[in-house]
Length: 153
Image (cartoon, rainbow, N blue to C red):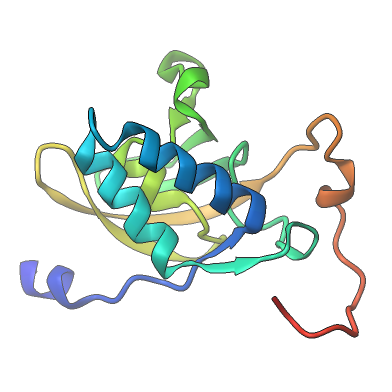
């Protein structure tokens, strides 16, 4: 069972340019006091495909997304992925700097990923649904983009 977990590839993820920039800055800011969280977030950012904000799918986990996922440890859970200052586990708001928060960024419904908890145990989760609510001043990013005739980013 452990061998299967060790050899599984991480799924392809997509992150918007603005989330990538904000998360890169956050990882740099917390590097001195939380190097493990910083390194894990930077590793996810490095492997992500960065896309223009207007072209990111509403089905991709972004900052502020509400995500329903099924962990290998139990029943499905629904959380909102937030920056550390907004985290409140009692309200279902999980920080991007937690191992599970970092694992979720950029995934889409139907994708699964292996992640390592703070106690060193390896787990798997599967994303069931993603809802990215409209944010103030960000309504244009919530609509499906029109087909583009320009080259991809």
